[in-house]
Each structure stands twice: as structure tokens, then as C-alpha cells.
Image (cartoon, rainbow, N blue to C red):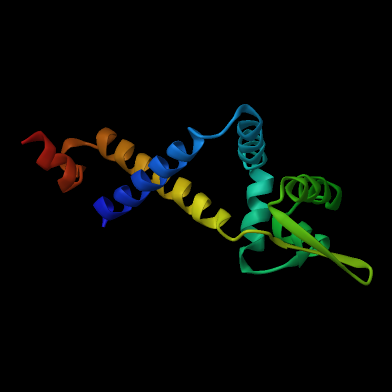
Length: 139
């Protein structure tokens, strides 16, 4: 399973970097802006809250446990980048993810980090507590 996950991660990284090779400087600025938008924990929380469907600002405020002004500020940036879309209904504005493939990227990064932390924990574990993967490498 880990080998399969690594193959997927490795393939995705290769596709990303091979696609980056053909981008000009202006396009790379847009890529950097996209990643910069994802570099804020509250924006990641908002994106994750929208995984189950659309929400208005009040609902997102409760789900993310922060102020309405803060949620609104981050939603505005996410909308400018194109990660979320907004739709006014009466007195409320509802937000939804514009492109659900963002979750593949998030899952890819989270999976990679989980693997990294697991590997680090195994390296620092007492010799008798290491996983069999580490023990096999030592033989």
C-alpha cells in the first residue's frame, strides 16, 4: 500500500514539475499565488469545511471557530484566486469549491506529510519499537 501511495505521489510530482517546465514567468506568478493562498491555516480550514458542500459565511464562521470578518477576508482572497465561487441568495452569500481537484492536492500533501512523520517517528523510536520496515533495512 505504501509503495502504491508513493508511486502516486511520485507520478503527481513528476507531472507537476514537467508541466512547470513549459510555463513562462507570468504563469509561474499565478502558480505561486495559488500556493500562497493555500499557505494560510485558516484558508485550509475553510477549504476543508467546504469539502462537504456549500456554506454561507455564518456557517463557516461557526465551523472554523473564528470571526466573521476574518472568514470573509479569507473567502474574498480564495474567490480572487479562483478556488471558491460565491452565489448570493437573498441576504446570504454561499460559497463552494470551484474545482474539487484541490482536494487531491491537499490529500497528496497530507499523505506525504503523514508518511514523513511516520518515517521520522520510526527513526527516533527505541530499537525494539521500530517498525519491521526499519528492521529489514538494517539487515
